[in-house]
Length: 261
Image (cartoon, rainbow, N blue to C red; front, side, top):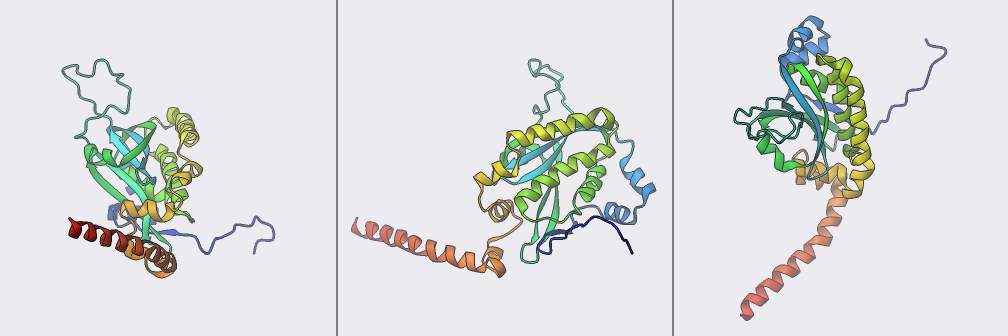
């Protein structure tokens, strides 16, 4: 038994990641077993460069966006655009997104959501995007290992957690690219710059006061039925009592105006 040590406090009310079913089973199995040979096989010697972004959606929820760096401009249509501009991307390109969201808000459980979509189907969800770095020679499965490394923390509030998860993901991805030595400093600097210009809990919380609930509701991680159940029941009842009379009054007024016409 240790005689000397440092206290590590555990928050009994913290959330933890329970659901990783969106990730490939072979990745999860290799990660849990610490199967280094399989991990190396699935992550090393990739042949694609990816621009990695931390994005904020229109509900002020942070998520990761990984876009293959494949600008194809044979006719010189982008000749006046800097070729190193990561924000110049074809809308038809397929990209990966990862986010931390609620699995069960009542039981304080999170899940990891993984999606593979065309950029044009994701773009309208994005309110802000911060370029973190160009990760070279990456295999797509490496993203999932970075997710698993970034996820097993104890969390408290979704707004803070989704941002911290996104930043941790970017740092973990350094292990899976060929240019990690050159990229380590820029990645840390870009995360700091993004935090200073808007990617911070303080800035986001000013926009969404009920961010842990509302931000994820719009995202689809928590539906309205959850809001009106369990420990959110009282809050839901209060909102219902306040909103329902206004709704009835508006409907009644509309009916009266229609009849009088």
